[in-house]
Image 1 (cartoon, one colour):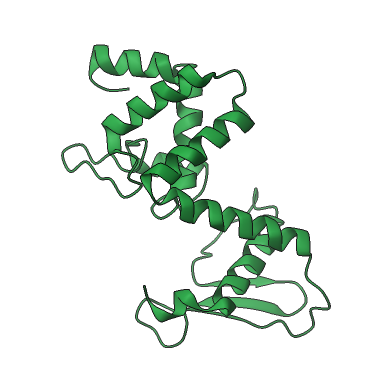
Image 2 (cartoon, rainbow, N blue to C red):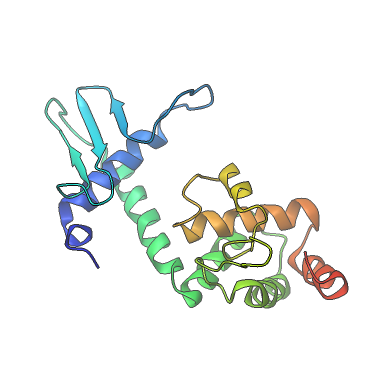
Length: 189
């Protein structure tokens, strides 16, 4: 693991930026936002290009009187959830929690069907890539850019992949068991 990923400054900077960016209404955003993000109160964050100098992120907190502790805690919990979901068992646990929170009508049977479905698709590996079809991620989205509906971080965030996969199943098949049945019948879902 690179040294800069182990520094508490990076974690705090990322938590702060996620809380600020999460509060911004981007429904009418237009333009290239990949290199610099500016927020009120003279706070800026920049990302260095890969292989660039520095820790990759710098945050200037001059002029900020306080930071909302609840927002930081939420971002920290979300970051922990992402790290947990990078392992297959963690991804299963995160999916079960998301189902309990967002799909309460799906029973434990549906969770077992989802486990079987996604175990067959990717073995719950968020880095899974099907070189024949181009499908990627835990749910094997094709094209994988479909997951940008949830977030553009789908390449590195298993929680984004899980959220997209659950919403896809709900919209197309209603339940994971129906999606699994279709997969057995047609060879895909």
